[in-house]
Length: 219
Length: 223
Image (cartoon, rainbow over all chains, first blue to last red; front, side, top):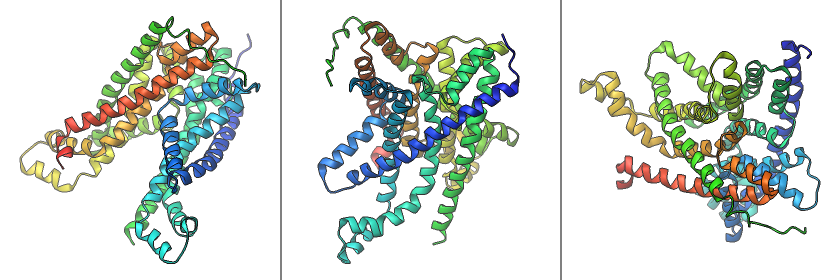
């Protein structure tokens, strides 16, 4: 057996971190797009759309992400597609991220005073125009801190994709452990790398939150 | 799509699924109770406790909140034996869930304590209560009442997160599903069933916690 230096371990883990970052970014952006579409259903006029959006959120927030990954992995296969792990991982994480973003953003939209809608109406704007010109620009400002905070959950969520065989930081940790028999060191490093990625994001979101609160207080 | 769903195996594997459900419930129960207690202790230290202990508790909270639960679990189960701490799958799973929920609930409870009006502390002092008595009798309960909904959702999140403990061979619902799919090759059906179980459990747990909130803090219902 060849010997692994600490640097060998760290280098392999850092190389795999790229895939954690790529998957996180994909899920976050994809989840944002899907989430926005479902948000419009959730706060829209159609009762059917609202009901669908509510069920969607309940389903994805009420089941483990791991189950969603398994179902995507085996479920997509039922359509006769040969499912690579990255595809199942991407699909499941996008759906999961969307469900949480819908709820976060819905809170932001609902926090806009009703008078703003009515003001739009009195200017003869239609529902879509009210949304686009009056509500969303204001809701967006409120939405930024919690959305940034949720990105940390997405990054941590990608760790589960290692279980369906997507090789990212956690999977690399398992592979390196199996080669080096040093789980304490390897998983310690893996945790520190996640921390190095997530902690600045957490701090940043806290900072945004505080700034938004201060802006609100001085109004 | 030419797929014929086959759930005929359910009766044969009923006991396996039930055992899995039992383990998931046990993990959730122990994790929730001990995790929240740990959270209360940490929140006390971070707000009113000895200053000396604050930095280490802050470090613990940030470290846990910024790393995946799965890595915490693997570190405890695979990593700790090399420094002489050998735990069984269930012990490791329980410990990981307590440590995880402890950190999250610390932050939630801390927010509740920090929202306490200053007059409450002064009222406690005026009644000649010692600081710890003030905390226990005057501060903690209203603080918990304030953040109960957030704490409830965090408990549900931790319960759903517990699906990962199957990876260290703790025999929970997910483990049962893995076992069934390896025997029957009915992967999609097995995971559909286990997903449904988690969904029902999540809904039931949320209802239970809401009821508990009403029971522990009767004033909320009266208001």
